[in-house]
Image 1 (cartoon, rainbow, N blue to C red):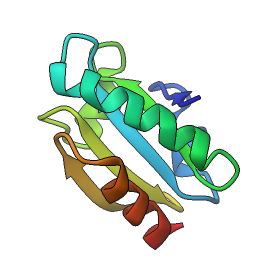
Image 2: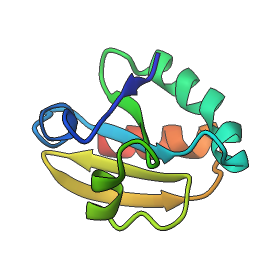
Image 3: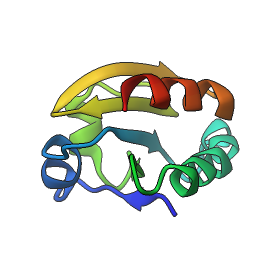
Length: 105
């Protein structure tokens, strides 16, 4: 199951993580975000022991979205050791995300 990131736990859960973190910026009303949701859940299950995968709702947690200049959702950030390695905007296939995860983990 994908983790739930918030403005409060983002520093500890994401930026201070020693392993790769995939962050999905989304909103409940966003159609493309809903399309990505099952993909994110499947990846969270698949990589549960090696990668942190979670979601952050831009409506409920606006500060983190602003800090990372998220203007379009879904936006996916690959973060390791506090640094953004890559940003993907929009709907993307599970296989594409798996390739990126395997590249960065």
